[in-house]
Length: 279
Image (cartoon, rainbow, N blue to C red; front, side, top):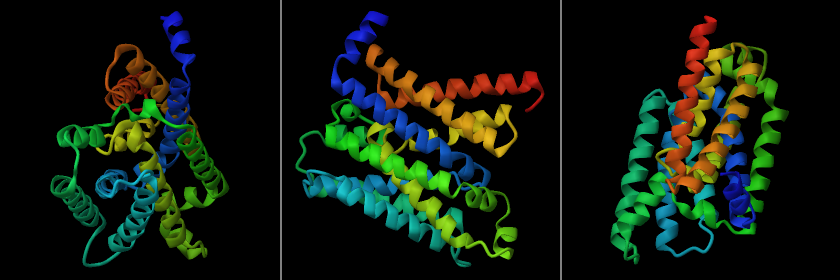
């Protein structure tokens, strides 16, 4: 097995895939803890459907780099989602359902009406559940992912204390003068960037798993916010690496394999938590 892995690592596309996978897993896990604690983890699912709709439009327009359309559209929808969710007429969960289902339906409709692909079913399936495109990354795409990941991690570290404050007590943070709306907006924009980055790795329907499972697993064992965040980041990176390498060796779907490893890790941490009396 080690000889096979060494052979695969001699190919640049495997190294590119592993770098991108690790960076996406790291970014996803950082915001996952905040979203789970704020009971807003379903925003990832909603934005992933928005990204699917934008990617459908990009495919119809034959854009050479769909990131130019998908990223700004997803970020704008994250902002609208946050604003709409604060409305007294449309609550947060209803806003997510409305935007996500609408984007998913419109995206599939556009692909059916205007797509010139001879394998529409395959295109839709690969977009929803991930594809082998993670193994065909170009150096420019890898560098873009590295740059965006650095921005995400830097923003999280820079505003860590503020994110911590709004995660646990928005009312108190607002009372002491913290611009809660601004930092909620920052979280929404960051998660939108993560969603777009993860599309090629696990597909739009499985992105939420990268956000939720590492955070929930870490919470089975640890209790402090810092410990949960660090454990979630380490666990997410390890699961993504194991899942990606397993998919390459076994020839299984990349996205589904990574999520399966995350699920297995969750059950392991849940057992450890029960044995230690933490869950």
